[in-house]
Structure formats: structure tokens, C-alpha cells
Length: 406
Image (tube, rainbow, N blue to C red; front, side):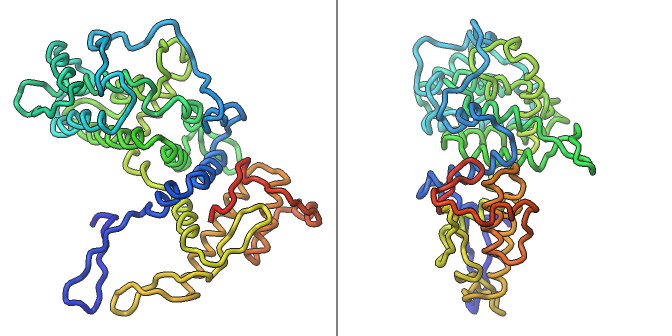
């Protein structure tokens, strides 16, 4: 059964279907408290990857992206498809209207995943020029008539992505993507290995994608899903995830107007990152569990205990929590054991995240404050050095203010 649908049994003869969105509270936080949402996401990104001040400022938009540059464009093979007069689709900023037009290509390609060399074989230039004209004019196209070939649609989809004013994955996130590729596991002695840490990479991509503009997020999800299923048909189309990544990475993640030489040693890293996105696309467009919990607590909490930092923790057992009756119906109880356990586990998970921050006075202060809220929480050995200090001004969490996150 779809994860967005559940069955609630009750005394009624027929069970009820309850449709829900697992990320409901995350999306609500994003729309109703965008600053709180952004600070929550950014604080966890900086927990996972190291972004120096300038790179972090680029990620937040406080500084213009500093990217490799070149005198000439890289994607010369698609110049024959470009027109001087730009329509509502090709060469225009990404909009929902443009996505609706391009979705016709994606839908058509999803029905032709068996075609050998899909996204590699270029197709016919005259057919593509005609198809481009129709898409730019906002025409609804019947691609099943046989007038066009899947290779035409795949080539035009790449051209559309390559002609966006900014890469689909955005310039602001460029340095973060390079850092994600460097996330590797540690051995038993704490030494860094060459084995990729897939779980941390997935988590960081999840967080970064939550910061994408809505139109970019929507199209990226459609595109990666298409490429994922294309790769799953590689026994027919001969296009593996890395083959597909090599074809599309220059169009969605490479900085604009660069040559391969301008990227120095980062080409393989960027291409491998896109291959990773294709392979794990079914996991990337959901919020990490702790973000869901923090967002839920933000709206569900009725009694909070405020940290002096401005970080509010919901008191254990402070709000009703759903539980099941014998008949299977969902009810609400006040201060139940399940509610206590659910909330306390979430707080302890947040404590572990704080513990993983680099050593600093700010970290020690937050740990001390956690200890006051959760009896038995282990304190760092150096925490007592700060036990008598009083800080009146608002502080930040991982370099970012998090007032009223939950």
C-alpha cells in the first residue's frame, strides 16, 4: 500500500481510508515559518559537511556564487537547436508552465525506456527543431503518432536543461555537492577511509533538495525518477546509471558556460554524484526522520520549556499523542507512555546531533541545557568549565539561530 494511505478500522462496517503526507508538518513549517525551516535545514547541513564561511554564504544566498569560468560555452553540440527568439520554455527561467510542457517529453520517454542508447543517441535535428517549436508555442503534442522518435525527445530534454539560465541543481549548491562526494566512512580507529558513506550522502542530499526553489525541486524529482527507471532497463537500452550521469551531468550540475578543462579534477566527482542521485532517487525526496519529528513537535507542542538560547524543547508528555484502541481506531490520550517515549527519543536524537558538532563553548552550553531537560543525558567532560557562566544574548545552533524550532 502507498505510504501516503492508511486504513483505520473502526466500528463502522467499512474501513476508512485516511490519506496523509508523511512530510506534512515539514511542508507546513516551510510555508508558515520559512525562516525557522531554513535555519533548521542549514544547521543540519553544516553538521554533515564542512562549508567554510564563504561557501556557506553562497549556499544561503548571502554571497554570489564563485564558480569556475570560461571564455566559451561547453555544450557546443546543442547549438544547432538554439534559437535567438526565446519562448516560454527553452532558454527561459524555470516555471511551472515550462515544466508542464517538458513533462510531455518525460511522459513519452517513460513509455520508451527500452530504446537502446536513450539519452546518448542524438536523433534527427529537423524533427527536434519542429518539436522544439511546438513546445515553445505551448502546444499540447501527441507524441504517440510516430512523427517523433524517443531519441528526439531525450535530446530535446537535455537541450532544455542545458539552456536553463542556471543549472537545475543551482549554482548556490555547487560547493555543497562537491563536499557530499567527499563523505566517506571511518574505520574503528576513527580514521577516514575511501569507502563512501552512503547514508550521510543521502541525508545531505535530502536536506539540500529541501532548499531548492519549488520549480527546481519538482522538475528534479521528475527527471531523476525517469533516469532511475531508465537505468533499471539497462539490459535493453544499454544505459547504466553512470552512462546516464555522463550524459546529463553537464546539463544539471556543471556551472554554466564552462569547458571541461575549467572544472579541473571535479568532472568525475560531479558525474559520480549524479549517478548516485539516479541510483538513490527513490529516497532523496523525503525529509530525514528527525526533521519530520522536529516539525511535528513545533506544531503539536502545547507546553514548552525554553532554552536560554531560544531553542525550545517540548516537555515530555506535554501534549496529546495518538494511540490505538482495541478496535484499531486512532484515539488521543494525555501523557501516555507512548507519547513520553516518542518525544524523549526525538529529544535524545537531537542531543546526539548537537554532540556531533565541533567542540566549542556554544556546543558545551547546548549540551548543558539538554542535561537540564533530559535527566541522565551524558555531559561532555569539559562541560563543567562553563557551568557558572550566564549568557543573556541570543546564541546560535551550529552557527545558525534556531529560535522556536520546536
